Image 1: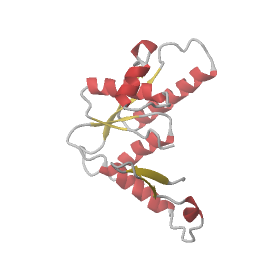
Image 2: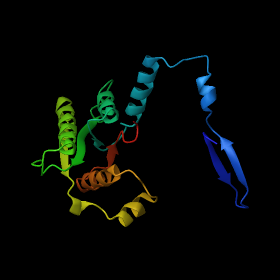
Image 3: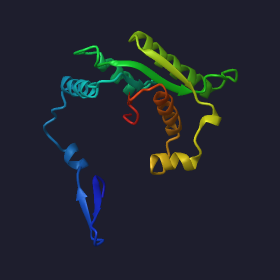
Image 4: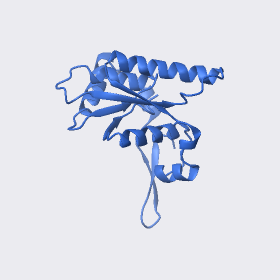
Length: 178
């Protein structure tokens, strides 16, 4: 049943528990989704994630989600200790000699991410993800503790490893939001 999950007891009793009802949402008469409220909730959420005693970094792409996080991290900044200081992106940076749609998409992605990092004055790290650096499928599944059908996970793992090697402790991401 959509919007439900199964709860299995230690005695193998199965119970379906509904947590969301699409029809209820569609038929809801009170539409209180004021855009200014949504913006405030997002800003508050980002600000709550910026409380740290170590530098904060993020994964940055051309996507809406990571750029909203970067932008909102600068709105209403309470202290210099509570904002993003650097950003990471990963891709194939070395060989754009072969022109095709995919290489153009990657070039655009990196260009937008770098432009945004420069606009907000944060350090920008380009991680060249060559195939030799990728984990094997077995290692990837093991580190994620489940099979993942999203190939961007390989790049995310590469970014996390690079950030960790640079001493980065906090890495925000908008991954999965869109």
